[in-house]
Length: 333
Image 1 (spheres, helix red, strand yellow):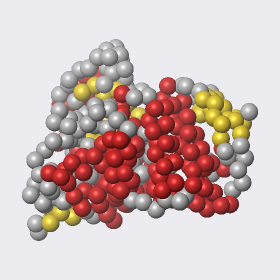
Image 2 (cartoon, helix red, strand yellow):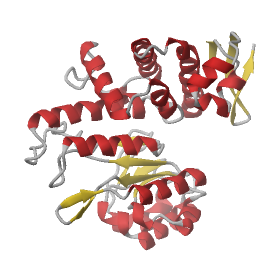
Image 3 (tube, one colour):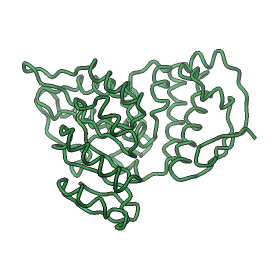
Image 4 (cartoon, one colour):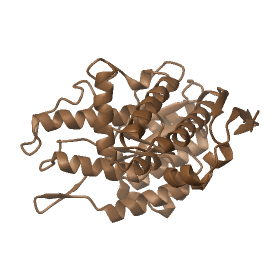
């Protein structure tokens, strides 16, 4: 387990000693910690023991825990409900009879329970590392993962080797490059871009699958010198910079797909959600010039951008995003 302090210090603590050392976290200035022990993911009893200790000794800590999708149930979600945490869930296929299978019904049910409980979760997934994996299957997993509204998608292969792992025989070296590019595009656009509230609405309106969207964005990044090849690190860039990239690319995609009429609503959605996320993260207030009333943009009808653009009247306005006693709020100026 590794703690990730905002105080610029890190401590390596064995998983077996987390509970014993938790009472000292506050004195040591530790504000968050990340558990990397994959063996813990399937141990529901031990995870709940750690959760109880966090609740007792360090309730304000942020904790990131690897969790197998199979142990998530109502009791587990209830036990995690009052913690400041993120569940990191490996999105792996199950091998059966020499084939790789993904139980979409089970995953959809679990993800629905997570979202209804308001529990933050993300997926961890790779490409070409399981025997029998194919480029087509990777694209299918990526499309499916994004449909479940994860807070983020992590790709462990972006480590020291930058995802350069040997092919598996059915996953050619060229396909490995394509997959790595899609993964990096997802890492930039979706995860670093905090796109979870609106990404599916955007791709549905553009009539494009997430995997193809990321393939196109990967090409765009390469053309604009902000790809992995050029040493671009999305996590080190200001969110406002990623947001500008998102809006520029989305404008191009709207024109390509002959959906120019949805771009004003899409742009408002991206910028409004981005402003709220920055306010939540660091208390930074914003003033935005929008094409629509924010009440409309934040309403359920904006989930279908095409219908929204056809039925909702534009209402240009200037909006201030601010903190109201610890709650994000907005006001039309």
